[in-house]
Length: 328
Image (cartoon, rainbow, N blue to C red; front, side, top):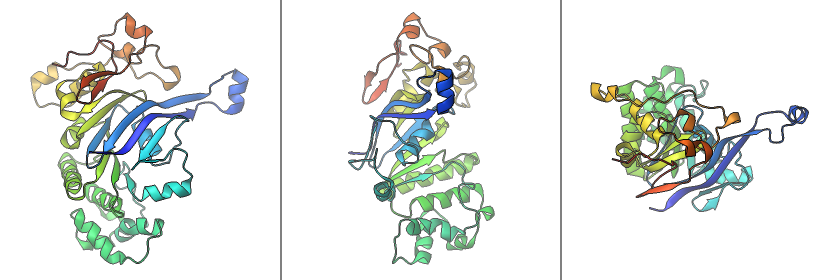
């Protein structure tokens, strides 16, 4: 499969101090790196999961891909072979027809003043697409996500969380996108409804051939639907590869700890959990060397002195660790 989305050396910086305060305090670089040198691909028809604790930079990556947050110089985001970094908004709008984003809150992300019909057909108006029968389009889109046309007359407050998420999926599909970016697509939903939403996304992917980039901290979601996954820590990827390979053979201690903390019905598995020490460091005071060393159970002196490079475990499974797990 060819790469639909190709991200290379992505860096996103946010100002941490105002200009005057930075001058007054003698701070030469009043910025923090929210995303550091991240590279990955999303191939046509596949699902990639971005995983990590809150604040790791997952949603920042999504917003940057969509052009809502600027990328730093030297970053590259290519979609369908076209470079997006540095594009003026007018040129970027044409690409937004082919990639769309589902936001985290299923109900809150829908305007309370619009009916479901207006919500799912609004992309046609935003992109100036005319000549469509919007009633037929609304019916078509609702049927795709398993809702009857009666829902077209409802308002968001009249929907359950699962129904609201289905409306969000229908809206995302309006312009036949090639890529859907789903930010916590199952957040706030009951477990049974989560499964329904994930199965819906999987079915639509099979039928339409769309690529999906899922941002989540829910490892059960990742294992259920993704082909590949990438683990983020402090704005960097620490491990990336095929989902089942990482679940069975994690190489980075942070990945091991995340997988260990995932809820398991097996009491023996719960007894053998690997605990992560301490708190996540501040982005304004990143640790020297390996940035995970102060929370790692296996850290050695080298980890405190030198940042690890990227190592390859084969089959696209890469990681950054001086002393990786044995993979067995």
